[in-house]
Image: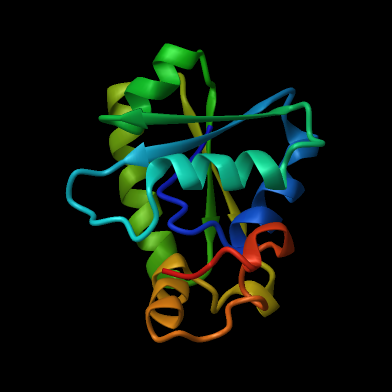
Length: 151
């Protein structure tokens, strides 16, 4: 399970997922509907984008969910949660969430993959700010959707 808001998906997300594919029989890219976040892009758009980017990867399934990630893992029978790490603060945050998830569902392991150095500065938050400022994001998002990144 690779959960996130993917608002929007970035080259960092894409890279983590492609590097993780050899480790798993299948991967669910799970777009969480977070009630505390105001998304820039509609859920349907984010689903479509991710399906387009990975249309040739039969092992990747794209779905949305609401509620706790760990509950969605249980529903789908996922044994692992995949997360990307860009910095020490990401690690601290993900470690806390992994421990809580482990307490709720001990059979699910969290796998952390370090981002490539050249992608470590890219985040959805920063990409959203560039979009809001009418900047060019083609260096930060997958080419298949870069031309759609306007609001």
